[in-house]
Amino acid sequence: MALTNLLLLMMWPRHFCLRRRDLAGTCACATAIILMCAAVAASAAVLDRIAVTVGKDAITEGEVLEEIRITSFLNNEPLELGPEARRTAAERLVDQYLIRHELAGGGYAAPDAAQGDKLLADLIKTRFHGRTEYEQKLKEYGVTEPALKAHLLFQLQAIQFTDLRFSAPPRNEADRSVTPISDPVPPEKIDQQLEGWLKQVRSQTRVEFKKEAFQ
Image (tube, rainbow, N blue to C red; front, side, top):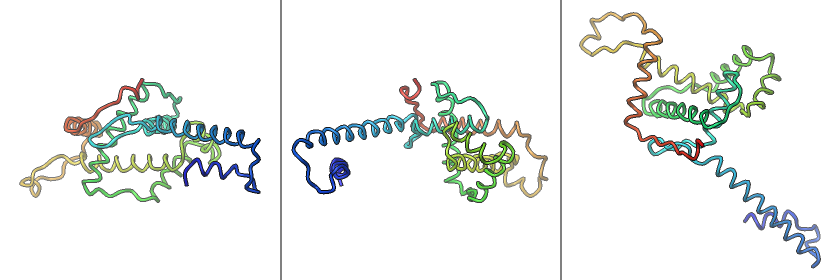
């Protein structure tokens, strides 16, 4: 049913009969509600406008703002939604996109929902004095629990990906059977390898930041 017809039906009197003198006021009210709905829809469209394109995919402004809110919540930092904060968050989302793309095509196992529940429970236990304080903080930062849980699960998956991809020193097949396993790669070395990999993948991917989303 069209939005106009639905709104008019919602305002229709029970006896389905409008007096002539009421018609103008009712139509004006319907028009006002329709315009209000259109304004809300327009606001939502602005909120979800494209902020970054990565290859053939897009990161919306809403996703950028969500990234800021969740990161600020986890780091217990003041919420800053200015242009610089949005650009920094967008850069993180590009890196996350590249990792997600690699995970999807590389046969890496995804964490299950139970792991997300445990991560969330551990966060509440170590950071808050009970669930009430935790929920108050969620509201303060404008974060939903499903979005937070998804973020925590991706962090876990990204750590697992990094460990599997970069923690073992590279060896060729000829040396695999004769070279003993060496000491674990230092964390700073892993970080360097991850940064180098991200830089290489970025150079092979078209990434465009929309100026209007960061003004």
